[in-house]
Image (cartoon, rainbow, N blue to C red; front, side, top):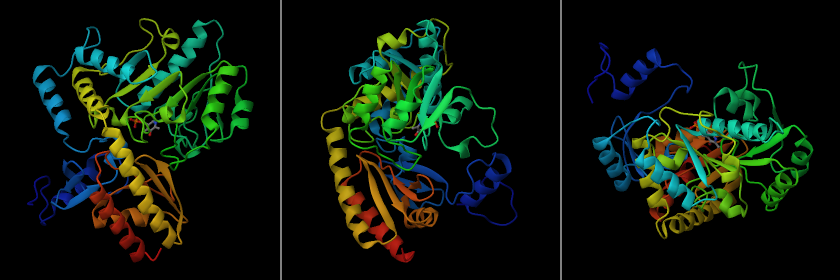
Length: 409
Ligand SMILES: *Cc1c(COP(=O)(O)O)cnc(C)c1O
């Protein structure tokens, strides 16, 4: 492709053009990247040079229905022609439909809409604090887990139990404390009288695809009931079918008081949501919270279409079956790869831990045509769209074997 963006005297690829212009004008918070993706269709992506890739990352668990899903594309186009945005000073039909659909398929009775995961968690934090304040028993403390990830605003980096996200941003928000994940005794000890909520991910995503033991969730729920604190589940990454059920906690046999969603909800159109029980929703009054774009016609229409596909009969069953097939294939690889420590995950949320940093492996997989990413330094993460089929899995597994061989792992 001819250069189109800069006036460089030397011929450059479009990718290099983008890179040069990006590095000159975009704040460098993401580091150097090797490719620019410009087109997608289902499981496939193409870069600016026309090279094809199999997508095993879904934009970090966002495009759960793959790229350009016809039902979502149609909903976006139809809504864009009708009405893109109005404020929440008026009723919004698509937002109302979305809330009703989310209620039908979850424990939640009421929803609040925003733009993404961090904002959904901000809403949850504010709701928990205001709920206890209104009850006349203020307890602003919130316990979260070490190695957790809850977003990048000041409150949500505070909630995030990883010091690297706090560095240089102090003072953080008061009232947060941290416990080891999957340690019920530590959680019990951390729930002091000023604690009003516990906030956890069903499976820690950014923290390395970490799954707690079988009894953990029932014990957490029981503990929260016994000590009268709210349980907030951050399902921003695990929700919308990623781990098998529509929401991960449905597979753990518990019900939270508050749940947050974002990533997969609009299949790529930015939207976040916080759902809760009727009782907890009383913590917010008119004027307590708001969001200009929250649940606007365009993002809500995309989310309604996404929910309709995800909840269609057999859709998630098929994803679960293909997830099981992927785990079988990875278990085979584990037998023959000395550097591989553990394969873990649920549904189509997969972490593969190695005994060394995975950056070279991620690089070599992308070179080979597989889009994937890390989850912490030593964990390779696969988050394929839920429409993945056996042939895609076979191809990725074969390319993974080749890359591991090339790296002599
Ligand atoms: C991605 C993520 C967030 C943050 O979502 P943003 O949309 O980037 O603000 C919060 N919690 C979890 C579990 C996530 O995976």
